[in-house]
Image (cartoon, rainbow, N blue to C red):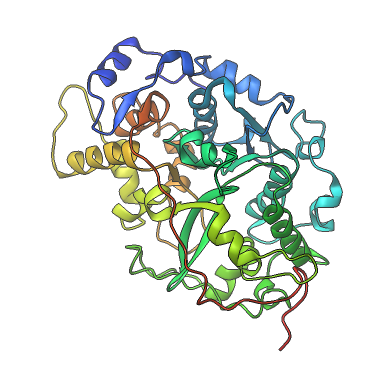
Length: 416
């Protein structure tokens, strides 16, 4: 993989530090991991001891070398940004790989379709990730991050300091989005928790139960464990999003991991007293996803084509014209670096939107366009490693007293 041009160019570093936007400050070099791209890439393909709960977990089924270059750069930049206090573990399902998931999690945590490699359908990759993220957090603690994520704020300052603080009520952290009008639920692309978390284990138990005897997620919304929940129906007008070009039944099945979360947060289990609504309201440090992870999508109307246009625009150099597109790109990059935690890019579900930036960057034609010297994309990457935010991130408060509560076991269907 080609070296990161900006991070290895002293002239660029000096320029960027001289123009740090409002709301940001330079990170001392001593806090960063300044190994080369090649050194970090090699390190990511080795297994590392788990010394504490300060782990970042990620997954690419075919291994690091098969990841698109822009995704490789995401994970490399996490390592750089988080420095020596956090360990990034990139796991896979490659036979005989040092970083194979089975080195970390026993087969009993997974359904037969996962263990036998018989999962099928169009969402195998995402659903493999759904099946492994919670067992890793349950066993070892840390933060799960989807590999399609840029990281703009240190994990400590997103929620981990609160989770580690024995005087804080918070035990989990993440981002929430409105999945139905007036109903927020936690996304699963960023999940923070220490090991042995009671919500994490029960969440996975529900999701695992959905997969028993199944090879894909088709019809999960009709499962006895989920059928009492309404279909997902995001209020796209509030999100500045076009209507999703998919049926809500298939969309709900695709996001059945979210539905398992929704089930659990509404349950009070008489057998052991676990109180989902109380846990959700009191013990989760949750911030708004539309600001903290989907900001770019909002300001571009969820158009991958527009996002590509802004980030590939030349920011500096000879002949730069500061027109409307240039100013829109400058405003986005500076605001994202100072006022958002992550930027999550995804591929789907297929057909939901006209275009996805992740698909464009995946293509052979554009596979290096996220890191071309002098572009807004390269500036965004540089800032994600070298700039620290000065804002305070506060959790949302939730009133769960008006929602339906089910007094049933975690794996007990609601009676009709």
